[in-house]
Image (cartoon, rainbow, N blue to C red; front, side, top):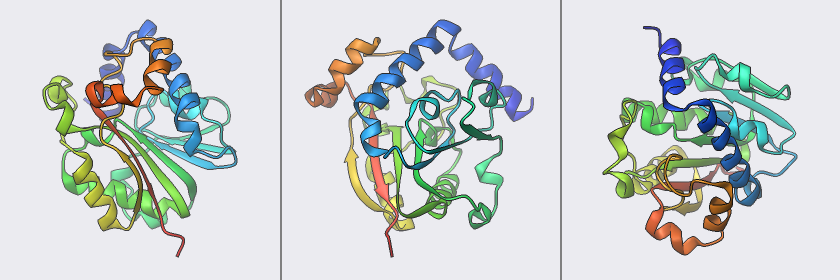
Length: 224
């Protein structure tokens, strides 16, 4: 089975239409109450592995681009989103990617990689694709706090903690601005299950320390 066909079937099976609509509503709250603070409206933003465009469609930005292997991404993208269906890992020299961005966003992507070498390649691609002073924003399952559920999804392969990701980012050349080791719950199928509950959850960081299974990281490319 081809990779793009496999991905299409996998995610169609994982989330039905009702769950897809619920995810969009949750993303709206997450962006409005948290993520938009890290994305100036005049930014050029790239979303890597953005699937059904929940983030890139709703974030306020001057220029919006998405990279994803799933061919359905183009069906879900708003008209102002440029969609590129290619594999970042097969791109070769990332310097050949001529577009540059103020922000790159990656959510729930690294755990699908098959090796640390692939993760290094992705992080290096991000570093090269960012403008000087630009930032990488990551929401990612933190194996340190989600190890019991981490492999409940068949496509989860690479375990990553906030400490291992921090070490790699700094090795590639990023400066770490912010790390929240425990941020969102592990899965959108878990708590909080409604936009209202998510809004309350985001305003109570104390809850993150008990329910958070995903990390949030902001790392920047130096200006010099």
